[in-house]
Amino acid sequence: MYRFLLSRRWLITLLIALLMIPATIRLGFWQLHRHEARVARNELIAHALTDRAVPFDTLSATPGFAVPKDLTWRAVTATGQYDPEHEFVVRKRLNSEEKVGYFVVTPLRLADGGGTVLVNRGWVPSGDSATTYPQVPAAPAGEVTLTGRLRPDETATGSIRDRAGLPDRQFNLISSDQQTKESGAPLLGGYLELTATTPAPADQPELLPEPNHSDIGPHMAYAIQWWLFTALIPVGFWVMARREARDRDKEAAEAEVELELEAVPA
Image (cartoon, rainbow, N blue to C red):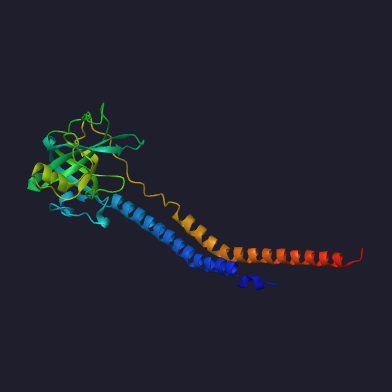
């Protein structure tokens, strides 16, 4: 009844099914690992944001310092004076309402000669054109104490590309290394994403919201879907084989009836 399974077509179908089973199992584990990585990232951000703030220069004390993953988003403080002469903006950035504008980045000279750190003071809307420098609230004068989130230097990615030939004081990245080359003044590695200033300024760019650390994404659901699909592969093969067997039985029975009718004398 199932001798047709030894045919070339059915052997190829069986081979494809056998190859799909480990592939879909592996895809399920890939999504599971993405889920676990997302959960770990959320926990890291949650701890970093709630830990007691520490001075920026105790974490990033040297030029070119690469902020490690476990310190990213760490609450930090810094006291010093802004250097508006070397302020710049970062293009094509979104605020909390998904509007395109600029990040305003101003170097802060730390008190007691602790070095200089880049501070992302927040978001401002675009100017009249892509080449026009936007209107930016002036950085507070005098000594200020800042609180913010420690962030690593940005590098070119699929969504953020670095390129030359931009208008004056406009860049695509927040990079202490890049700005060190531009200004000639060494900057501490990483940067501070501002959350509060003391004394509070009368006007300032729109502060950036906390990163989302509650959304776990759809990866666990995708993993379960892949594993359900894995279970359906042998079931589907069995259903197809059963249907083929029934169709063959039906065709054989019909052929037998026709032969009997042909054998009856007219």
